[in-house]
Amino acid sequence: MTLQDVMELAKQLSPVEKKRLIEELSSDLESESEKSKKPRQSLFGICQDLGQAPSSGDIDEMRKEAWKNFPREDI
Image (cartoon, rainbow, N blue to C red; front, top):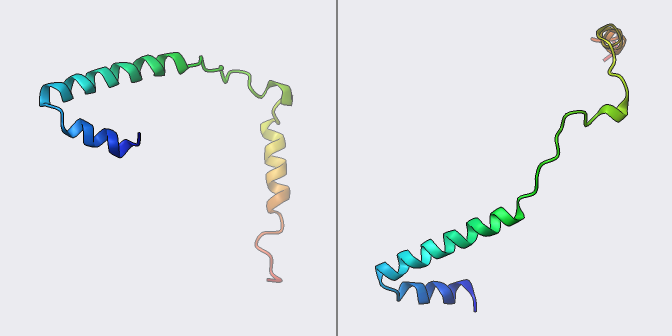
């Protein structure tokens, strides 16, 4: 049975039955979503295996080195 078949059958329901159908479907969706929820892993310390971060002095030095030839006159 396809979604179109289900929609055609749902259109034949009375307004009260449509409301009951929606309520039952929404409660089913809620219970399914609660089952599928997995606890999220904390992002705290996610990069700890990469070692210590560069210092601000190191960053400034690398920035100067990267930009020392900008703007170039030969372009």
